[in-house]
Length: 106
Picture 1 (cartoon, rainbow, N blue to C red):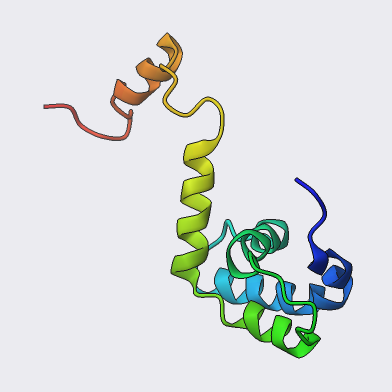
Picture 2 (picture 1 turned 180 degrees about the horizontal axis):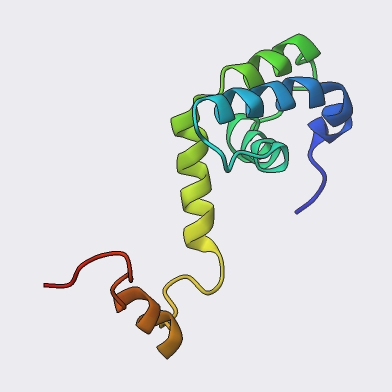
């Protein structure tokens, strides 16, 4: 994928990205990361670029990201990764169906 026109603002927008990721983590979304949030913004919020879009508007876009929209993006990205749906190995299957030692089996 080519460079996005807003990539040049990444360093200036980093404090807002970090703030948003910290907000997500306070809301118990522990997997949030600045790199994936940036990827979400480039591919979803800023799909259509605007040459005259001020930096303050970009910050507003970052701070207005809803956790549900970000997590939906993350789920779709996980579904698209190679290896999704591959069969489990024998060891993985055994670990799934082995009862825990601290639980009683009837």
